[in-house]
Length: 206
Image (tube, rainbow, N blue to C red; front, side):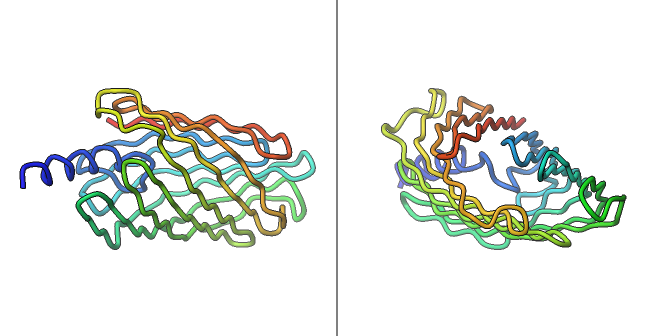
C-alpha cells in the first residue's frame, strides 16, 4: 500500500505539468510558440478542478496576424488513476476580443471553447487537444515516451511527436518532433516541424 501511495503522489507531481488545471492555489504561466501561431496564458487554479485566467493567441497567414485575448475558465471534468497511469479530461471556454489584420480587417468580439484529454504513465504519454474559435479551429495530438524514469527532483526528459491542424489556415497536418524537459517547477519544449517551422514552449508552475 505504501508503494502505491508513493507512486500515486509521484504521478500527481509529474502529471500536473502542462495541464489546464493544476493543484489548488497553484499558478501556471505558459508560452507556446511556432512560426504560424503562439499561445500565452496565466492561469490560477482556485480548486483542484477549476482554473481561471487570461489567454492570448496569435495566428499568422501570409505575413498578416490575428490576435485574440480571452478571460478563460478551465475545468477538470473527469480523472482516473491506476497504479501506474493517470487519465484526464478537461473542458474550457472563454470570451474576449479579436484584432484581425487579414480580411475582414477590424476588431471583433470572439470566443474560445474546447477540450483536452490525456493518458499518461511515467514512461508513456498521449494527449489530444481541440480549440474552437469563431471562425477557425485547431487540433493537436501528441504521443511520446521517456527513455528513463527519474526521481522527481531530477531532470525529466521526453521524446515526443506532435501533429497539428489549424482549419481555415492550414488544412494539412503539421508534424513536429520535439524534446520535452522538466525540472521541478519548470517545463520547456524544443522542436522543429518536418517542413522546418521552429517550436519553443515554456511553462512555469508555482
